Amino acid sequence: MSSENTATAATPEAGDATATPQTDAVTTNDAATPEAGDAGTPAGGVSKAMIADIEEAMKDVVDPELGINVVDLGLVYGVHVDDENVATLDMTLTSAACPLTDVIEDQARQALTTGPGGGLVNDIRINWVWLPPWGPDKITDEGRDQLRSLGFNV
Image (tube, rainbow, N blue to C red; front, side, top):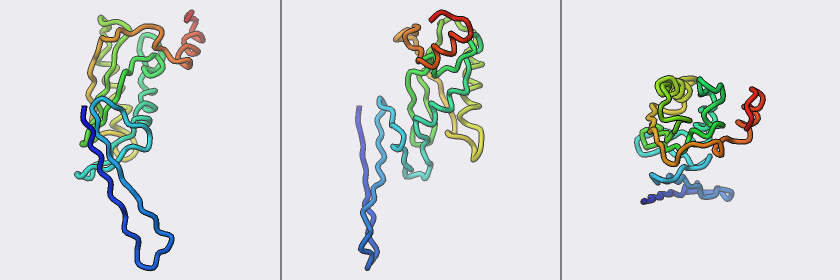
């Protein structure tokens, strides 16, 4: 894992006694997910989406069998946004035999690449992972409440 941090300080204008240096930091780490506010504009001028915004948008992606969003079900294991504003989602499913991966991928693409200004990201990739295996322990409290309201005992 490598991290590259760059920072530039703004130069105060002459006679501006209240000017304070400002920094723009862009952190790149393939294993880490930046928190809200860590997004920057890379050299190519592409604004990177914030992880928190992507996770919030992914709540519009609903597991077709259970009717609960994939975030609250605990199916999203990780999110990475590259310098071209392409999001790679590490996701799993409740079952490796699930035939609905295309449906979930289409919903994710719709949730993240469309909308005002073209969406949060330019494109998405889903990396389907099976380790660690999904289990009910990955469901959020909100997801548990939603499942209970549908009659599930979790």
